[in-house]
Image 1: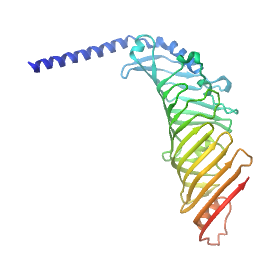
Image 2: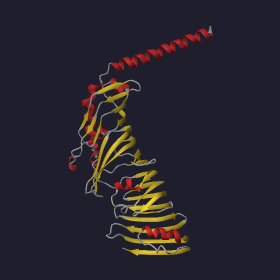
Image 3: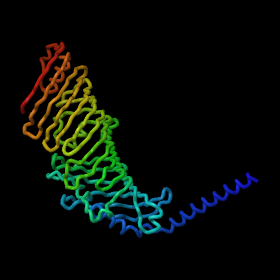
Image 4: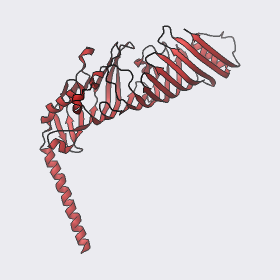
Amino acid sequence: MRLIDMRRVLIGVGIAIVVVVLGVVIAASLIDVNKFRPQIEAQIEKSIHRKVTLGNMSLKLFPLGVKIASLSISEDPAFGSQRPFVTSADVSASAGLFSLLRGAPEVKSVSLNRPQIELIRNAAGQWNFSSMTKSDKKESNEEITFNSLKVIDGQVAYTDAVQNIPCSVYDHIGMELSNYGPNKRFGLDLDVHFPGSGKQLLSLNSKIGPIPQQAGASNIPVDGKITLQEVTLSGITRFAAGTLPPNTDATASGEADISSSNDVLQTKGNLRLTGATVKGSKIDYPVEATFNLSDNRKTDILNVQSADVKLGSTPFALSGSVDSGKKPAILDVKLSTKNASITDLAKLAGSFGVAFNPAYQVKGQLSADVNAKGP
């Protein structure tokens, strides 16, 4: 009898589960999510202070969510761009069933597939997304929040008037914002694939914010880790034109912990360069470094707490500061080496245009302790 009773209980539970699932499916199939489109557009516009246009919306049952045919977010008129800030032809969003049933959809996760994003910094240092973070305390309950915002295989157009960088386009970018909300700390994970052979991957795993309310603020708090995997420096320096001398490149791998507060960016990590070319001259050995640096973005002073560099088998220790806010830059650095290979130093000197007579053989070891101050 007990076995029969147990079977009946299991059958009853199974039937109840099937009824509930069928009820959910039937209820969901009766929801016309497209009728919520004006409401959702208005809610997002009020939250981010931009014109938002959504395409046709349809319901997905497994997993439960909303499929949006297209998305467009307008640009800040102050930046004069003819292109929208964000466009995407394929958007997915998750929403609670009961929020849909009661006619007040709560969207908590959004995925943008192959979006196009426009990032612009003007000559005053203001970013085109800064105005989206403005907060009105009277409307704090309308501010947008979400558990996850994903960018899958995105394209970013980047223009920076401060660094004199014209519009550069980067493909195959992945990003996820997690636990985002105004005036709060949120997660940012970023993968950037650069063109070229090898992995060509730059990754960022970080916590950011809260974002200051004043537009164009450069002191956004950041704590995270940057990883480079076989990235050519020429690809990275497109974000900072003029950082490298002409005909200079290398393949970089390494990682660094970064933290930012107020106007100071602190970074500590390691870097390995292979296949380096300096002003057209090849360096036949790897360059390795461990470093601890801080950069004051307000004063343009780079402080080198410590930097241990190996050029092949030749070690150097470097510390001091570089004031790039002055023209020309002002150095105050200390360089030391012990038992350095003069042969390797001669090769390095040749890369910077100081060449020995080819008829000479340059050999030996060198120890030195040098202070350099001035422009």
